[in-house]
Length: 282
Image 1 (cartoon, rainbow, N blue to C red):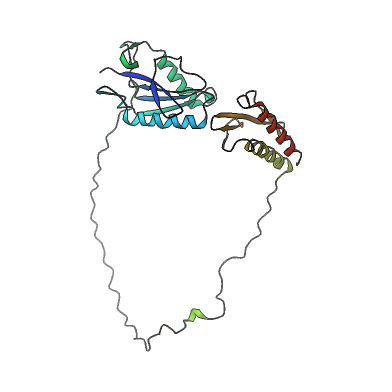
Image 2 (image 1 turned 135 degrees about the vertical axis):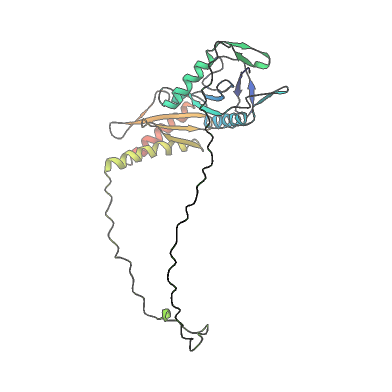
């Protein structure tokens, strides 16, 4: 059976278009989908400048391809795709999972292939490595045989006749729990909660981080904030990244070289001025 592969450009508007097989379309502002039947995998690669909305839109398209495949004429390419591998180019070399998946994708793109119609490619038999699929183990239902044990019956409990109530309590009759006196409590006495000691340096650090976000929010209504494993903070808006910074020498904010590159310089200056103004409050 011949395995096929396809490559798609995922547009921000929610459409995908088949493109020529190769590395030419892997640009900083693109999201590329690679469908590979030989490994039963679907790769979704995001460039470093792709914004949050564009990445999510591309992910929805990739999930749809994984579930239904791609129809070409009377054939469906990728009907047996098992796994979706999403790669963020910003994490390659930093996050092990993204780095490994990116290496797999590069190895796939470097294979020798034969180009067919409608941008479909097939790999040469000598270059195709068989997909490693873990064998499925069919579990058989285990029948448990109950072992009957002699059960000793308890001696019959003598029936004790209760005296009939002398009077029937009406709905308006107060019960013994309606007394005005409070019932005794078994709740232990509350122990004083020890005060949490927070250093002034820690408060200053958290305040400066918050000042960065506050200054940015004066110019962007919707931002996405994330803290990386290496301690860096990343701030993005709908159309792409805004800045990345880390803490240096205690509470000093150190922005990366690429921070604020893609936004209006006037907005960048206004954000810096606002941050300096807020920092004076500490």
